[in-house]
Image (cartoon, rainbow, N blue to C red; front, side, top):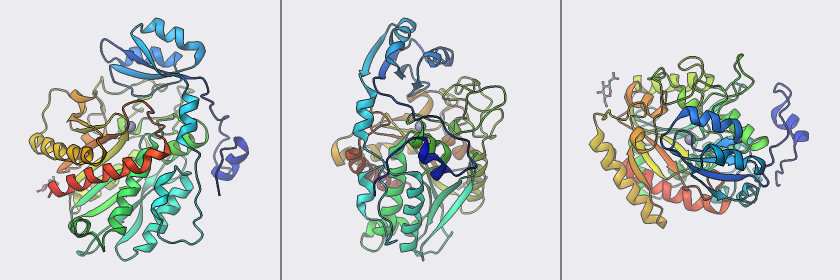
Length: 420
Ligand SMILES: *[C@@H]1O[C@H](CO)[C@@H](O)[C@H](O)[C@H]1NC(C)=O
Ligand SMILES: [Zn+2]
């Protein structure tokens, strides 16, 4: 069965009656993506551009990719003359991404690899996880890490090996913190799928599963993810409101309670893509995730944290909040990242840039990597930004899902092998 987005008729079925009726689906036909070269990164300039643009795709960068309606192109060019059009019609790119496909789960068997050939509605991701878990019930379970603004459980899968449940240091993996980064849901799921389905047949996988307890949450921002599927494909934040503004959403990756108060790496404007919230950790999603990180820290400890994002092709490590600080295990983080980038490249040539988050990409305060590194006492903490470098951006065509998850898996195997 195919799942077509049929507008508001569908909303009552998908979301139930507790959720207010969402708006009409945003139509990006004719919208353009402009790449603006700024003299320096500035949230003030971004805020000005944001008033005119539909979305800023990579907030914080000095080369900003922004989505602009045909009528607003001239206004944006007047604000930033150094601009080029990198996508003439976002509507065409969105069509190439493919429809959301709802597979036939009736057999309730372990999902096959064809899962990774299309994007899927959120509800199906939950079915994927429970079917996968059901096929390997003696070495996995479904867990939740709190609930979202709209009451959805942050749902993950815990995988363990021969040592038994909870006996080893944790590998914690998050996907889809930014709603529009759809390739990251698929990638986190591919990791879980590989770890379980290859355990019996692949000695490398078996040794990696026996060595750690894996906690994988493919969509830590379920409300935003659903909103990006039903209403606005380019939605980034959660769906939390604030009384002082009609704008919606906190950036969950600027809300973690570590260096949240530092300025320059997030926005205090509720309309911004990087709105940090009213207080450290005040997004419900962050409360649940923080509690789980702290509990893993206080248990067997966290060996590796991986926060999967797109796009840009980066492997980044702390710190985000200060570009001059060097993390204590910087040399090991760089060495592991160097090998991971080589392993990814060896699959089909995709090049990654590596480095400390702040100086390599941009400043971020209240970020997950900084929190899990510092407050979570993780041995290694990384942000990965997957394909591509802007040609398709978040709307990576369905035909690129398998190539992306396969190369990224090799990066994970390399990282886990070297994190020992
Ligand atoms: C941090 O982790 C190390 C192991 O990597 C452990 O020895 C140490 O006790 C941990 N510290 C805290 C405060 O949890
Ligand atoms: Zn992101």
